[in-house]
Image (cartoon, rainbow, N blue to C red; front, top):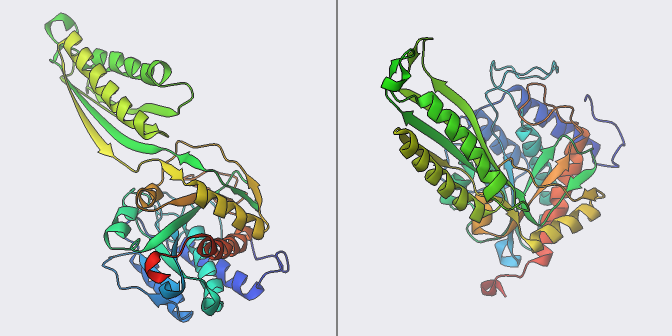
Length: 394
């Protein structure tokens, strides 16, 4: 980390320095999901300074802008997320978060700076663009709902392809991960309430012990992935919280479990929910307890189209990046909602970090900012060349 390295990229040193300064400003003043008011105004200001037109969309936070002309070709969208996390920063950086308990611990400041850089580069050649590039600065990714807000406000209207990029700390700077097909998993939140009958711990036969029921249920749920899901599919069922009782000599009436279900295949997502309901009903009957399930639906799997992935790979070659085939991950991303509407691809950009996403000491190597901006520029240009022009514009 530190100051930009002069001449390292053969890049526009002035722009690179500006993008690093932008990233550091965003990092110092993080805002949580749906609270990105100052971030939104800063993005709008930076875009106005480059004379990039802003679209009037009904968003409290977040920005939609355009470069180029819809009359000359297809519309291609590039997306960056802008929100931070409720984490106390522990990096020790001179530009560390100045807001207690809030931090850009997932690199959304890096994504935003990179897209702003691409916007500047594309604006410089606006009259040469074969189409239109729509810039999506999306709020509330960490809540898994920001993409839906963008879609609802019309941010994807007329778009032929959509692309997103996420930093990857375990990949070195100059490396990009591109994969066609499933890349990131769907996510469901799971809340289970088990109601038994409270009794003295010395006379358990007089009650129905929800803790024992919980133990059987947790064990049974682990069999879903190991015995019901194909070994060539990917799924996770994790119980992450157990709350029951408040003293040593009383069997409580209630137990509360919470957890998550993640899958790479949409059909597995439906099947696992069905199996959890069946298992819960069976165990409830076995122990004469009541079990209530509450599901919270999150984003579906991130699934890259073949065409979009091919374009992403060609752009990476043009930008001089080393391409690897990343392993799918059971982390989730609300970029998947865009892909339900429009074909697209999501890629992983190497940032040579020492800590993973959402860690208090998470950092990115700032040498990746220019590489990411240049890549997004190449990606937008290639996508406009490769995508068929809508019939109305032929």
